[in-house]
Length: 295
Image (cartoon, rainbow, N blue to C red; front, side, top):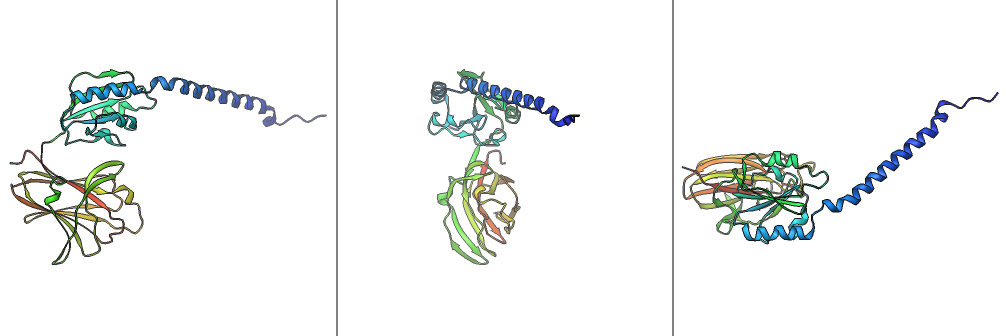
């Protein structure tokens, strides 16, 4: 008498049929995706039409935000000199230096995630006209309620600033520089102020700062990441007369940290200093602004 096949063997044909059916469905979906994708992408003509509008209507201080952030091809076409924001967290960026924002969106892209974009972007912003369509692109202007009038920008004042490295009462001149750096995926044009060796401080001194509300932005440069073992916290101190405020950057801190310094009188001298117990990979940069509204 022949023994019956085990249940697993009897089920094998149906398992293979199911697997083949799944494979065919996946293949058909991939084919559909590839065939329909070109119709969802923006064309060169679409970008050129948007560029013409921005060339004619953009004003100094405007900025373009990409939605979704990874649609980088737009940068090839937009007018030179018009800033473009497109990075992992750009939807939530306050863009305090820009009173008007142009949102350039590709709404038909797969996984565009525009609902999440608008949830992060809209608070504090008001529509300045309806969205305009250019093929698979839309362009809409917003008034940025998060913007602040800038009375002082340390980057612009860098040529008159004094840089030094201090150890106790000793002070040695050291150059200051402003450059593009990555802070948690965001490109920032900021002033390098890497922490020097133990017992030392690197200082940037600005004189004649106008009456304003001072705000410090600072963070570790990403490619010198805070994930290295053995590194220590760094500290940025801001000295305004007898006032001294500190911003501690923890070893694993990422992104830009903010220190609200409040109003300062006209003609103030402001000193920003960095220090760390172990300077290994303590590469950091800062931006310092004086916003309007101080009394």
